[in-house]
Each structure stands twice: as C-alpha cells, then as structure tokens.
Image: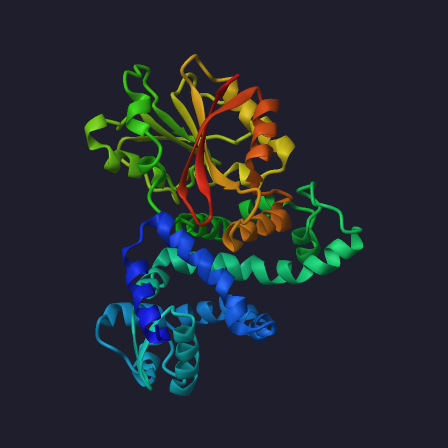
Length: 388
C-alpha cells in the first residue's frame, strides 16, 4: 500500500473517530513522530517551538485570525491581510512571513502561494477569549519557563512543594504567590479565566457523568455549588443541557470578590456568591460541590484544607465532584504531563494519579465513589467522592 493511500485512510478514520478513537490516533502519531523524524528531529524543531506563543500572539495583534474568520470561506492575500491590520503601516512582506508560519502550524490554511483561509482553529483564535488567553500566556509563560533550569539547580533539584518558592517567584523577583500576583491585576485575572475556558477537550463532563440520575429525587434547594467557578459557564451549560430539570435557582456560583463583580456576567437562574476557598462554606447540604480544575492549582496540604471546608457543609446526600486530570501510572500524554509541569512551575501544585488522589481524599475524610473520564487525551475526569 502506498503512503498516499494510507494518509487518505487515516484522514477518513480521524474524521469519523469518537473522542476515545481520536485519543488513540494522537498517541500513535506522537509515537511515530520520532521514527519519521530520526533521532535529531526534536533538535530541528526546538528553535521554532520557542516562538510558538509569540507568533500566535503577533497573528492576533495583526488581526490575521479575525480577518480570515470574517472573510471565510474566501481566501485573503498578505496584502489584503495587511490592509485589515489595526495600523496602516503593516508590511505585507511581514504579514506573508507570519501567516505562512501560522499555516505551517495549521492555525490557518494556505490555499496558494499568497492565499490563506480560515480553518476551525482560526475561528477559535479569532475570539476575544483567545486574545485574553494569549495575553495570559505572554505575560507569564516565557520568563518562568526560561527560569526552570536555574531554579532547580539552585535548589538542589528538589521537588517544588511551597507555593511561595517556585520558578515563578524567581522569574518575577517577587514574594507573592501566583494567585496573589494575578489578583492584584484585574486584567491578568480575567485573562487567566479566559484561558481556563478554552482548555476544554471532548464532550462536556455531564455527558459522561450520570448527572440527571444522581439528582433524581433530591429535594433540598441547592443541586450544585460551582466552587471558584470563574465566570459561571458550567452553571449555564447545566441549565442549557438539562432544560427539563428546572435547575434555575438551584445552582450557585462562588468565586473571589474580585471575580464576583462587574466582570462576571449575571446569568439568569444562577445565584452568585463571593467566597474564598479557605473560608467556611455558607451553602449547607448541597447535592454536589463542584471543583473544576481547582485542586490541581494547590499543593496537597491546601487541597485537604479546601476539601475539609466542603465536608463541613455536608449532609447525608452531599458529595464532591472533582473535575481534574487523573494521570495514568504509565503512558500519560504530553498534554497531561505538560499540565503537571505548568502547575509545578507556577503554583507548587501538580496533576495527580489515582493513588495521589486517594491519599488526599483519605486525609480529608473522603472516599472515591466513581471516576468518569470525559477527555481521554488529557485524562480530565469527574472523580465523585463522598464522606467515608
């Protein structure tokens, strides 16, 4: 069988695969890449990897993604893209060089020597949320990443366990923790939450977790508290996803006071409360206390403290839904392990294996009732826990 035929078959399989199938294909492609590139292939790619985030940000600043999305499906030339840039002096030669590289990253599609169109990734990068997310990555990622080797050499190559002593503090020359740093900058805080909204993969969690069955017959007022839920998207999605359950008025969004302000959209049917993770939980006896990508931001001892605050508010039917990565013991994807390095570098936190989670839950007086993986590449899952 010739290579072209194999590639076409793979395209067909990929377009028809479900989430689990796509995860298997991505893993296979990642394993094949070193074979195809040869042993020096990684070193050939390293220089361009370093420029990935800045070049995408430059594409946003030049309105390349927004312009292509607006003109879709019609292609635009570099001269046309330069004319749509926010400044009239943008060079078509520069725009061509940048857009050509963006096409090599498959963030736009090149249809001719000087012709480009939007693809699904282009449309994502053209959104306001993506602008904020890239602002977040530009504000922090590069400097901190470059500090990693020096930080660990200075600290005798020990694991990071103190949120006030990480590569982030060394890079920014500050004593503040990461969350203190972004709390002092409302714009950066908003960018952080926009980045979190984009970090989605696969079906919504409630398509895998039996949400409707679990709340059947539950009488108390509050079905779910979205703890540190940012802009409240999960509450909105639940109301839209289960219109027949009449969830309006039974969902509560909680976050820090600076988030529960004018920056947070007030959604109909969602009560909004200001609350710090480490203070008393004012909502007693909810069916679920939902933590989406929260515990991976904190060291183990802080996670136990957060969970204990929720357990204090339990009644007999209450449970916690932890929406976080469950790292496999072997063969974790680069996406999942990359999150782990990110958490370590900024927050002295981590992604966790099932054994790690068990230890934390046990110390907080909890036990695992079930695990429901909804994102098979990154291994994001709903871990359902109740009182021991």
